[in-house]
Image 1 (spheres, rainbow, N blue to C red):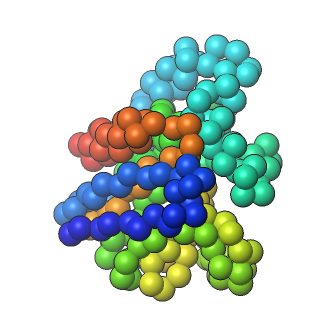
Image 2 (image 1 turned 90 degrees about the vertical axis):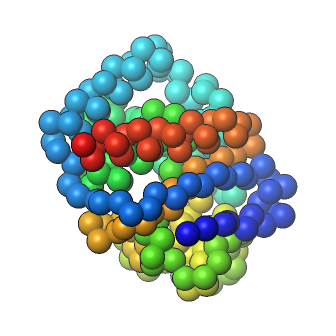
Amino acid sequence: MDMDIELSPTLSAMGVHILNAELTDISVWSSRKEVFTALCDELKGDLHERLRDDGALTRDRSIRALRDLYWKIGIDPTKTRPASEALVRRLLKRELPSINNLVDAGNLASASTFVPIGLYDMDRIKGKLQLRPSADGEHFNGIGGVDEVLPAGLPVLSDEEGVLHLYPHRDCTRTKITQDCRNALVVACGAKGMMNSDLIEALSEVEYYFEQLSA
């Protein structure tokens, strides 16, 4: 499979950039609790070492870049956190929820690298993928939510059937990762000020954690 994502010139000019990878012929199942808990505890200890004061997280280059992007698109990042920041804050207070071995791997990788990660069942994607501004009145059905009508100009990832992702913080129901998934698209989400090396590291971390949780 070869799943390319077309990036619109409008978003590219804003500094939005992405990298993606494919995981094929995989098995998705519930993470073993003891393994997931150990990985969470290890990462929590690392984060406490890296974030030694209350302002360290918001001073981080990637978190600042994501917050700046949010302000540009009209979202207050102090109320709606970038996905990676939300995961870090949750993990520092308590354990992350366990969904399945691939989603858990994505969440751990995102919390580790501060890079938002999107995960999609490739076999449920229809046609070409685009990262583009939303059109006024488009619909989005987020995981665990209700159908939303979008305003114009929000960065979205879409296929030929509709919006899969509100960039860079929410995925849709249609392509979510379940135990039926055999082929997955992994997307690392970048903003102006983040490096390609940040996104490469995030994709590598997804694979690392997925291996650990699949053993």
